[in-house]
Length: 284
Image 1 (cartoon, rainbow, N blue to C red):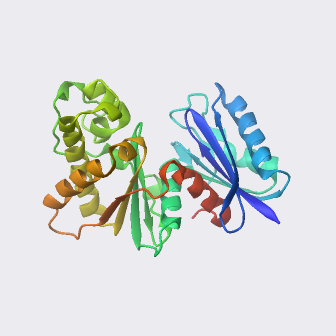
Image 2 (cartoon, one colour):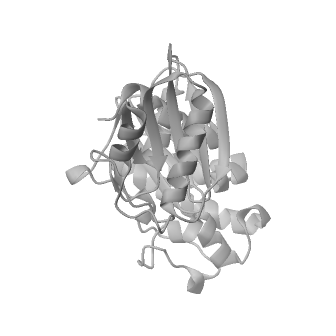
């Protein structure tokens, strides 16, 4: 018997789980991050040991912020300043003696969401709307990658927008007119001066309009069969945000069919379940 390990390596917290060969989680732990990547790595290894509980580890999968080289497993997540050019794959394979796979968290989350689909769609676009905005696109069960394996950045598109405080719109990438700079958690705080959960009806309408325009762009470019939305802002906005954004998308959509749009079925576990998925199946 053996176990597979999934790692969700976030900017402020780590989640680690162990699952059997069928992917069912039977052990999991959560801890806050440390200040230096070496301390973080030591903590992750303790968490792996804890959830494995003496069983042989068959494979490890990890979700982490970009940028990274998914083939070489070298990571430099923006939200963890001390993690720069860390050869995570080499370190973990030497430590645990098994295969280790790592990819951008939104790609991994997309695979987790896809794994939970029944029946499986031909194509699924997963969008996370949280502190920032990102996504992963799955086509016939595989991650869509750009030229040279680059991860497409769907939050950094420009849209015709509505904003009651345009002077506060800015994106952390440095470009002034990105969608992420209008609807992410950080953007909402800048524009409205409060967290998403405190937005009033009119403010939610602006966020929904801007999200809907983004969904329209993504639909005409990718033509996905399904779109799933996860992350704190999406979950917090719930069906109210989802339905309003879908209406905007459909009102501006004429040339391609409207996809099925819904909230994530996995909630905050999407990246963790995706990490367990790649631990079992690998990456391609």
